[in-house]
Length: 121
Image 1: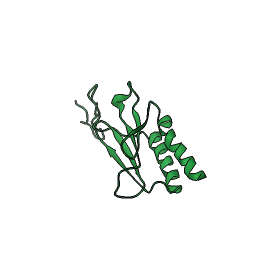
Image 2: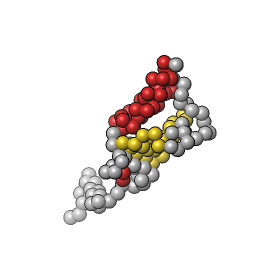
Image 3: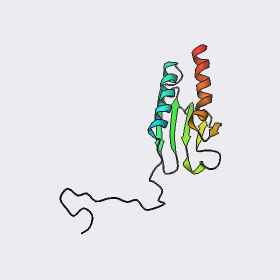
Image 4: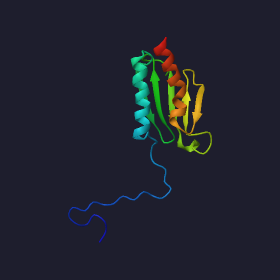
């Protein structure tokens, strides 16, 4: 008898060992941290919109000051770079790399500092 032959049985799906998933995504705690920063930036009047993109190589969160313009900040998770400069990258408005690293909080630090300046100013 094979899998899924009895009543109430459902076939078991076993992924092929070493197979890369169809797309990269954010873990719940990663997305929570990013959305927390986004909410505080919206409250400070810095950001008004966001977009997310999930591909086979990277997951991207882009934050916009206004609609229909390039993102003011872009946070990218690229697991293939985990053993090199780190899988997290923060890009600025003109595509420049602001910070790279292995840990999300450290990569978000420049935006956190910008938020403190926006609230104080």
